[in-house]
Amino acid sequence: MKKRGIVCFLMLFLGFSLTTSVAQSKDSSRQTANSLLDMALQPLLMPYGLITWKVGDFSDYEMSLGAFGKGTVHKEVTEEVDAGGEKAVWLVVDAKMLFGDQKIETLYRRSDGKVLKMLVNGNPQEYSEPDIEILDQKSNQTLEIPGFRTFHNVFYIKLKEKKQDAVVETWLQLQEIPIDGSAKAIITKGLTITMIIKAMGNKLTPRTSE
Image (cartoon, rainbow, N blue to C red):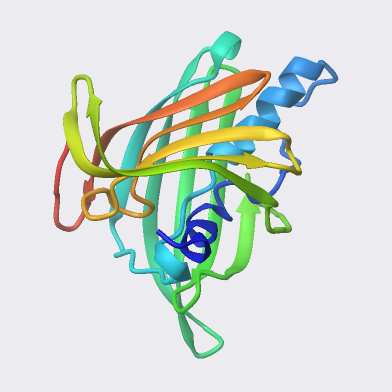
C-alpha cells in the first residue's frame, strides 16, 4: 500500500486531541487515558480518501483501557446527506466505559473523506491532521479473533503519531469489515488501549454477528 493511501487510512484515526466532558481530571494518567481514547475512537478512511460506506454499516468492538477497565465501541453509518451539492455521510461512534460514555458524530464528504463537521458529546470540535511516521507494515497477514472468527489477507501497520508521541498498531481487512476495515488496534502512550472487533454488518442487510 502506498504511503498516500496509508495517510488516508489513518489521518482521522489519529487526527486530534479532543476536549471532552468525559472523565475530566487533573490526574496525569487519566488525562493520558482520555487522549488515547480520543485517538482510538477515530475511524480509518477507505483508500485514498474515497468514502464507500453504506448507510447501516456498523462494527462493534470490545475495548480494554488498562487500569481504567473495559468498555465497548459501536461505529455506525447513520445517514447520507447533501453538503453543498456533494454527497456526505454521518458516522456515529458510541463508546461506553466505566468512567463515562462518549459519542462522536462526524460528517465526511464522500469524494475525498474531508471532515465537514464534528460533534463530541454534542459539542462542535475542530480537526487537525496528524503527523505520522510509519514504523512497519506487512500485507497478507492472518489474524484470529478468539470467539469471533479468523481474518485472512490482513494488512498490518505500525506507526508513530508525533504530535501525541503515541505508537499505534492496527490490523485491517478492508474487503470484509465495514467502515474502516479495522479488526484490531493497539494504541500506546504509557498506557495502552486495545480494541478488538466482535460484530460487524449492515443493519439493512446483515453480514456477520457474534
